[in-house]
Amino acid sequence: MSGLRPIRLAEETIAQEELEALSEWMLAGNRLTKAGQTLAFEEEFAIWMNSRHAVYVNSGSSANLLMIAALKEAGRLRNNKAIAAGVSWVTTVSPLLQLGFDVRLCDCDPNSLGIDLNHLEDLCRTDPPALLILVHVLGHTGDMDAIRDICQRYDVVLLEDSCEALGSTYKGRKLGSIGTAGSFSFYYGHHISTIEGGMVVTDDSDLHQLMLSLRSHGWSRDLRPELRKSLADDNGIDEFKNLYTFYHAGYNLRSTDLQAFLGRSQLKKLDHIVERRRFNFELYRKALPDFFSQSGDTEVLSSFAYGTFIENRLETYKHINALDIECRPLICGNIGRHPFWLRDHKQLALPNADKVHDYGIYLPNHHNLNEADIARVAEAFAAVARPC
Image (cartoon, rainbow, N blue to C red):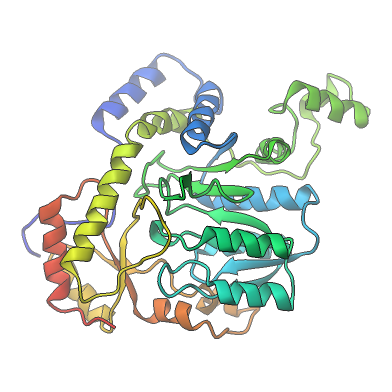
């Protein structure tokens, strides 16, 4: 090892003073399960996103599950066919499979690594789906106007997995707020952390109410009073029985007020975190001019990590790891080449996603890195990595 400070892919975003404030709040005897802090965090996050509604859950994976399940439960989808991003995450795709969708994977754009417009159009034209879930890879996006246009022409509901893109914008709108709903993750190492946690945002009030019910078993107690009464009246349920009546086949995806308390304090630092990550991305881009760098239509980039392509990943990994610098595959490459997918599906030819799978790597980017740290990573990386 180098003897220098390790440079990790992720570092803690929760500061000592936040832990002390949390301890004081806990010792005051406040309720720790979902209550007032959760409601306040949801309201403040929705305001920050410029969205009408937010639903706090226990992970970004649960956020994906919840928004897909709500659309299906609401009868909003005209068939059971869905398109998912080929470069994505397992829990971008697995809720679709678990809920019985016929899923096709869309190749990625060679520049942004998001959805490839030509392949998306071809998939929609040949066998129109009801649903598209895309991923804003490492905080970048492509032409969202063109994607929305394709979705509108083929009557496809658009969902955004924005778990890597908190704070990135497209034409003045934050990613995650452009489609029918968007998901976020607050896991350790993401832009902000609530230890574990996630959020769904939407402007659709009916979908919001349904997600509140599905999040908590399928009961009605979190709903607007008039909706709760309507459900009870329509089903002949009296006030007493309504305390534990389940109107939907729901889940328990709740998080806690303890974590929401942290989320509210983290939210105050988010603008600074976004700016630092954007600045670090530019440092990497300038320090590694011979290597691929993502590009697209992102206006403000809230960079999750610095992704690129090299021929010798294992050699590079071993070299920089010996220097106390972490790196990893670029997300998980082509999701269609993983064992869970191949058990029931044929391997698809997704040329751009395959390049990510075979050559993709990403380097650390977080708000605790400074210019010297980025220079150290870039120097160690460039000393052995071969661009492709």
